[in-house]
Image 1 (cartoon, helix red, strand yellow):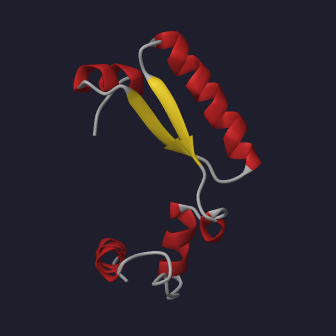
Image 2: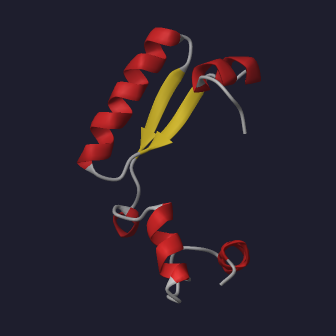
Length: 92
C-alpha cells in the first residue's frame, strides 16, 4: 500500500517498470492513457501491459465478490485458500 503516484513509488522502490493488465478494448484505452502519462512523469519507468487468457477477459474483482455474496462458487477463479479468505472477509 502506498500513497501518491505509482511512478514515484516505483522509482523509490528501485523498480524499472510497472506491470498493468487489461481485459477488454475499453480497458486498453484507459491503460494507454495511464502509460502515456506515467511516461511523461518519469521516462525511466516503463509500463508493461498484459492481456489475460480468454476465461478471465470479462472477470473483475467486483464480479467475484458478487458471486460469493449470492452463494455461488468461484472455485474455477480462485485457489481454495484465497476463496476461503474472501468468504471470511465478506462473512459468507
